Image 1 (cartoon, helix red, strand yellow):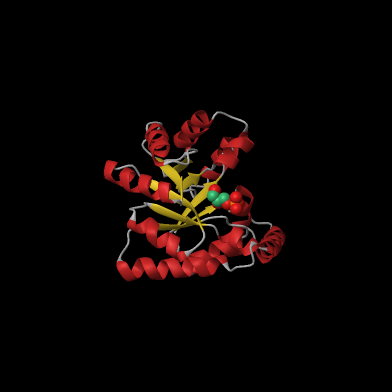
Image 2 (image 1 turned 120 degrees about the vertical axis):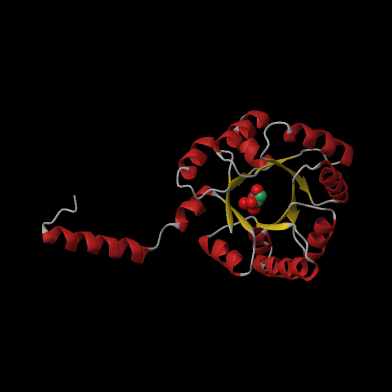
Length: 217
Ligand code: G3P
């Protein structure tokens, strides 16, 4: 499973990337707005920190505008993935990007039928939003399972990028039902390392080791 960070905070990204466990990054217009920075600058800096895919989202709502913006974004760095919304115009643009060899991440996916259309349009990644479906009273993980089944039934190459992750359990559950990737907010990524029994056990190990008076070096 590929683990991406869902962030535009370059300092936080550098810290997490130092673990060697960050395979890529996703961004969206809300995260760009939150950064208060120029989008093209931020994406360029992120692409310099990680070698893996970096999703940069178009702002246009029409196909022609998406194509113009996506072609511009793709020139920032070789690892830019153009993110487009799952709309009719977005999927028309996705098909053209596929023809041009530009990787795409089709985002704001909330149904299996939407995911089917995205795969047929040649999307490189599909981003089903687990947390927002949960917030809406549905079960976001069910959608991952449904998409996995459909994509496997027909051999679609589109990678399932579990998004709108809210907890470490979301990451584990998405892995169990076969998502190819998960994009994770930094605080949730940090939480993946932790378990109270690990901390308790390590504390006891170190206390017992101290009693031996030994040194390994
Ligand atoms: O960036 C795409 C997605 O992960 C955002 O999810 O619900 O946290 O805004 P959310």
